[in-house]
Amino acid sequence: MATGTLTTPRFLVAKYIPDLARMEPKNIGVVLWRPGTVLARFLQSREAAKFVSDIDVYDRWISHWSQAIATGEVRVKRRDNVTKDSDDFLCALQGTQKGNYVLAEGGEMMQKLARTKIPAALDFLFHQLVGDATAPGIVESEHRSHAMASICNRLFSEAGLSDRRDFVRTPQIECQVGAAVREFKPHYGILPNKQPHAIWHRVDITHIKDVDSTAFMFDNLVRKGVVAGKDRCGTMVHGDIEEQVKGALATLAEVSTIINVDSPTEAHLLTESVAMGV
Image 1: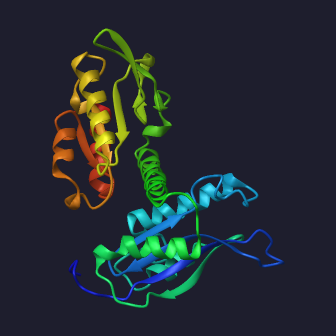
Image 2: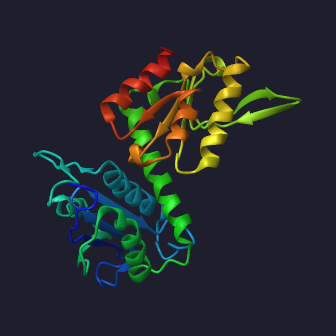
Image 3: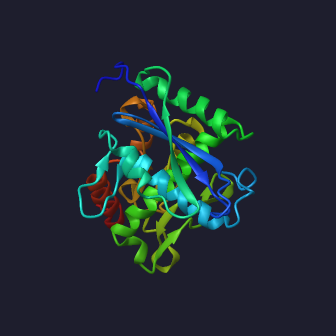
């Protein structure tokens, strides 16, 4: 469906029910959908969700829903997965709810919207229905980061890399930069004998500081011989890449292999190729 096409978005309200007998739910997020587009925002900070009895369980539910929304696909037993292009997407997402965590039908927006207007509409709904005091930009950034981490963690698990004894999350790698020794912390690494063989880092390419710091890390590690070459550096990106700043991708491509985690098959192959250094 074209970007400018107007459709009436539908939404769900994520709720946490502390006591199922009393049924006094608290709104914790919003999921907004139109054909081909789905976005969500949840309470992310522990301070904002301080009414939750078990924050670790809460985090797992938010991660689970965020992953389905980020990939635009809900896994359904004994039938084909439901994608965000389907009118059944929200219904399929509701099918994942259980116990204290539910996705209640919210209804439809009052007017038809183009896809480009969905983020603003989500912002409006979230603050109307959830009312978190956290700044919108911070909440959205935390949500994207949480979803991205979930996708990447699953990718490494399915590739069998996270089962390796030398696989390390957030390794600390020292490198001489000028007169000082810098300590870099990529999100993932394979470090046989504690020496970096391959490293990967998640990057939000809409944030220029994130792009520049990652490029700086990879460039120094490769030039100083700490990592054998840029083929052993993986930049993991996510989202509608065609709409992002092309210069950011070009910068990162000079020092690493770009891995778009929204293309699972290709991402799997590229992640393995970085591990092998080919």
